[in-house]
Structures are given as structure tokens and as C-alpha cells.
Amino acid sequence: MHKADIKKISQKAKNLFGNGQVFVLSDPIRNPNLNEIITNSPKDTLIIYRNYGAPIPKLKKQSKKQILASVSPKQAFKHKLLGIHIPNKSLKHHHLSKAKGLMTTGSAHNLREITRAINCGIENVIISAIFQSKSKSAGNPKGNIKLAQLIRLFPKQKFIALGGINHKSLKRLRGIKLKGIAGVSFN
Image (cartoon, rainbow, N blue to C red; front, top):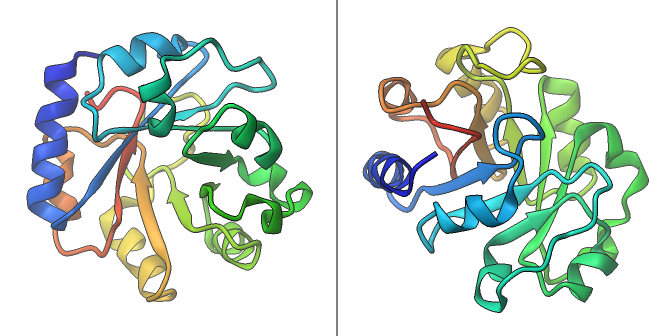
């Protein structure tokens, strides 16, 4: 992924959603190198490091405030990260009262999982997969209409769309109340 690609999709997202935020996700196969993601991402891009138990690599001090990682709140504070990302399967094991002061994201793939994430106190729910994705774990895409229907059920919640988002599909999210978009590659 190149910085120009992220910058371009970031500008399009801001035009569509006002102050739309772009999140880049690490992926053990397609996007595994956290420092490379940081180098290729504009400063206003947030990065979700799905480390799957691996230690957080040495990071430049200024880039730590761009990173959310799949770690405990204690580890996030220790590494001075922006926040934590909680995969849906791990939600029941987290006590978000210990995450005060950290941004929180959590993944959800259906109404039951969205409800669970909200009830656990997740600040930003990442819904996937919205469009056809290259990710093997993406499942069947929901499409923009189903996404809009799910979001309308929770008018006060912040949502981030993930899966198959690129320059072409981004336009289909126009008019949907999103905090931002997320992707591994955006192509």
C-alpha cells in the first residue's frame, strides 16, 4: 500500500463524511509490517495493529498516537498507544473500565455482535464485510443498504465500515452515518 493511495482515499472519505477518519489494519499475510504501514500512512490515518499475541515492535514516539493494538489496556498505556482494538471473539474477556482515556474499537459482523460490542462499551464499532473483500475471513458482504439499516438501529453509536472499500466502492457509502472507513489495502 502506498502513501498516495491512502491519502487519496482519505480525502475522498473526508469529502463524503465530513470529518471521516481512515483506519488502516494490519493483516498477518497482506499487511504484516507495522513500521511499513506507519511509513506509508499520512499522519492523520489511524492504524489498527492486529498483533495476535505478538509483541508490539519498537515504534517512533510520534507514531504511537496513531496506533490502536489488540492488547490489554495496561499494555496500551505502557506503550503510550492511542487505544485498543478488541476482536469480537475477545469482547467478553475485556473490562473496558480499565481502558478509560484510550480510544476503543471492536469488530462486529452482524446485529448480535454489534449489540455485544455496544453493551461492552466499545466506542467505535467496525462492521465488516461491507463489500466483496480479498480477506479470507471476510464472509459474505453486507452491502451499503444493509449497513445503513444496521447503523440506523443505533443512532448514537460511532461506526466504521470495513471490507472491500476502494476508490470505486467508497461512493456507495454516501449518506450513511459513518465515523470513517477501514481497510487493509483499499484496492
